[in-house]
Length: 124
Image (cartoon, rainbow, N blue to C red; front, side):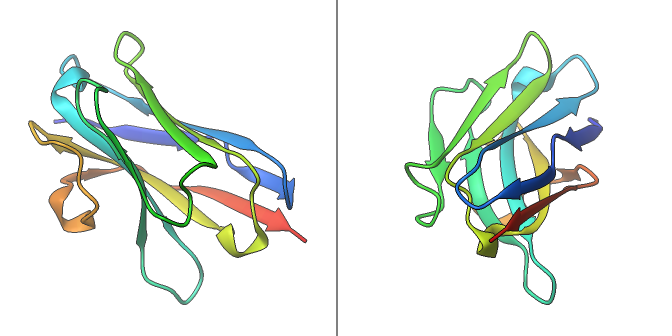
């Protein structure tokens, strides 16, 4: 079992950058595929990015390709989401999620563990 704590959200102007972090408890972090999702008010949760347990493969939603980068440090039990050139429509609560012994996935239902979310607000 793993517990996830997301942080790093905040208020940023359009075009700005933020780096989200997701710290995981437990000694088997390197066994988990990790994902980032977001949910804006009144909208469904949507996939943002994912990374395999080894970090060798990454996947992105088309809307964030070239601007967002997911990475992980297994020694620190942490996954990151670097977000550049942010847009106002990307205002949302951002969640990290973990998938035991799984690869990366864009489906929220494939993840068994979720962090509490961190608010990202992009002003125009």
